[in-house]
Image 1 (cartoon, rainbow, N blue to C red):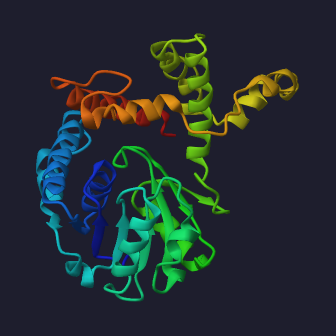
Image 2: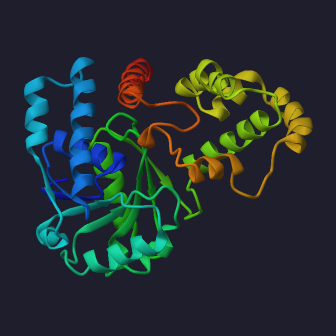
Length: 311
């Protein structure tokens, strides 16, 4: 957007650094803010890893990548955000911490600029309560890895103006993304509600000995994932026959898992410090360099799929 030149990205983790790259690639100057110096150093490594994959897949030249990286600066001082034109926040998924951040930042930046949160599911309206001039605050939910995945959810809180939501929607398009409006501020928004419904059912099947983790992943990678890369579930229902889908729903819905508590599998792994790629192990092992290789493989495959499904 013509009124935006300098972008603040708050949070130097996986999401924040990937978002920073998107803005920098499009010519914006980006300032990445974090409160921990070591986190910023890890963020710089993520940028290098992501750019390496992009160069190898021919998505960007080495020169353009170097110029992109040169447009990203870093700071440990929130006061340096005073003159930015747009904010994208990707700090820890904790309502109190987000409110503290936004209460402070919205008093530092100009009242006229748009403020966005990349929260994965915390109600925008609840965060918005801490924001000065809340009409300019909106959810802008990117998907991991943001520098590859096209979807962005634009979520309005109770006080978000229609103009703010429309501007973020248009900006998302200008960034080369595929935005959608989430019309009601429900927990998890749209995509995460679907993602966790799938996870809940697959966890149930694994826990009850129907599938292994490996085969559960294959269900998505070699079956449903291929379908959904090309067609939405309602398009698939039309092609398969609404009568068929109606009959299946009659007997299957009643048997699907409807647990109302979080996953004990995930809780146990968290207690054991097994957080996935970030810790070197989760459901699978990522030790001895396997973490970086997993990221490289993911990005390579995602870029191939994105190329295939572009119309």
